[in-house]
Amino acid sequence: MPFFRYDVGPANPALLMAGSTRSDTDKPTVYVVDHDLAVRDSLSLILRFSGFDVLTYPSGERFIKSLPVSGKGCLLVEYDLEDMTGPALIEQLTREHRALPAIVMSARLRLPPSRIRLPSHVPILQKPFGQEQLLAVIRRAMAEA
Image (cartoon, rainbow, N blue to C red; front, side):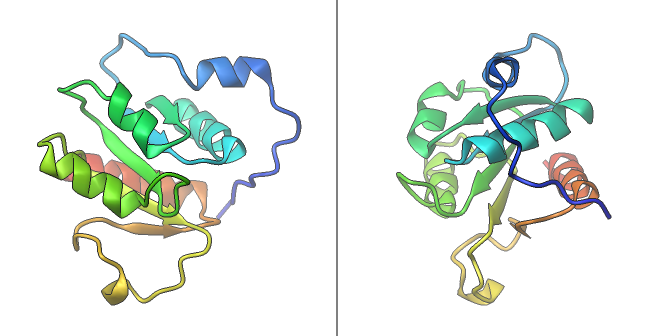
């Protein structure tokens, strides 16, 4: 199973622009929220080449401010954001009746799932994860929505 790596080298301006544009197509959208630009770019490339529209955000607050009221798709969020935790973002969206199917990812999270305060239907992806594992979890989350 191939793994993507986060050391993508110098930032490519074309990738940065592509990661933040909106598409008017009906493709499913994956909202990626991670403070690490290299992670956002890597995930954006993988997901776009796999047929998804992708919108990336560096913080939970930026995502909340940008999400349309009728936002549809799937949220892929880092557990440890700089301004809040991924679970806190999911909880806020639920309180505001703007919940999306969500997937939490983390490189440092080593707690047993029973100690993590997440709804039981929210999967956790341990970084680094393989491309096929990522796509399978996203497709499952969107299918169950």
